[in-house]
Length: 330
Image 1 (cartoon, rainbow, N blue to C red):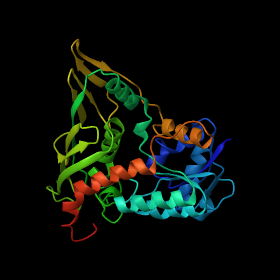
Image 2: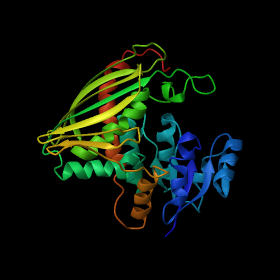
Image 3: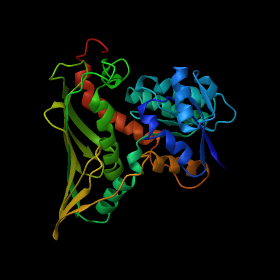
């Protein structure tokens, strides 16, 4: 069957990364879009050739000609929309971070399971060719037995959006953390795919620059169920931009960037080389394709509510101490 999608939220992520994937994947079509600002929803629909637009989410959630709903709104609204979709019997694909807390994620998983509807989360790197190449190299023994993995992310400080206001990702009312909460989860989720669930985690977070109320600097260490040890440091008030994760094994090392379209680099007994794997134009499309295929009885999507909830548990643990000291949501 052709899977008929409705989309709630028409912001930046939906413009190139995700929205077109819903109508470009095989056996998939985007029927309707919704945004609270109806004029912006209409503009999006016109640009993308979508037949219907709405300013009321129920027009999407309750529609008889929609099979699945993609929720592309700020994190603070994810739980509400997922639960409303579950009540309507609609399959749900929700943006990451999945929820404001691990407890919210567990609630979403339980509610969807009780309603008999599938729940997927937009950790699209689980299906992106460049990251699958990393997985294949590691599983194929390219660096021997993996011992440790180390992530580093540095980024210049961001204080305002294009409109001169604080971006919603740095506003505690819309996200329960800052850029670590919003972005580092991609790395942590992919490491879950590589090495299994994290069973032990320690973290320290702080706001060192004082530019906003959420964390800007984080360090963490963790142990995966597989026995691999991991650590990472993230600073979003640094002097330069760096994003690299290095996996070290008994016979080599492998490095990749989570956020940048850079080649994989591999060091083994034969020396150092780069492996260039292009990303598709719409990076959500490979993951969306697995969802469409699963709804048609072919295979399984690798990014589920269960796997995303595990990542939420890790970020909750890392940020717990910092969150306990915050006095106001912003």
